[in-house]
Image (cartoon, rainbow, N blue to C red):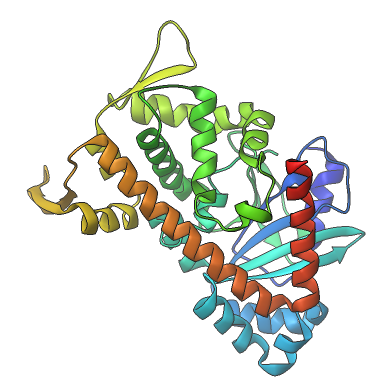
Length: 351
């Protein structure tokens, strides 16, 4: 990634309290995007959000909505994020060196829980998509430390003190399993990545009026090589090697899928648990002799439909809660500006 863009991303971290994890996403990171008005999105993981907000209110009080800052300060900001939203507080329209940023602060425990178990399927969905070259570093309040490239994936991980990047492999495998359940018996590689990309948008009310209708297609076609780099090793090592996926010899972009029960059991724990409440569960002994509960899978179609409904509800609830939380947290003017920008992009995609 160009030196200039590295400096752009670092500029926000330099003015914030220290964080344990930071990833960056958004169309502003695309190599061909030179529009400085496009917001760059940061997710910041911290051990104690209230403490982080307390420090940040002193350092950058103007980042917060006046009503939230004066009425309840860090305590109210954290309560709104936790009790109304899904644990993330966003500050949008933050200008640093003529660049526009939006950053969200989340508790590290909540981030890990979502990545590993899909508790809310909010942040985990964002980490399933590629966005320019993965980089790890250790952030000090006054400067960026050295960078190490990892895999060449387009997920911008700037700070990762707890190795979330490695834990995210569980999230990526879950995305593959969910996509394979929803796809027909034969499909192209591009269709697979499109299905993975679409998982976190199923049930999102914003897709009806405030998102580009071609968003998934644009993401996949614009970053196809990045999707391959991100998912191909897992497809070959975790799925093809275990008989869950077979690549067609006639066309490398086709595959044949089987073994529904194994795919369901490989989903992050919150999903099979909710599927079991609808389809039923049975107890079996693992190889170690431990009793484990397994979803009763009558047919692939029933399992796929049940999982689709579970994920759709998760996304709908999470996106709605976060939208309400965001409206309260950022104030009316910022909320209207943000929604207007989204609706303008959506309108352009329909015309």
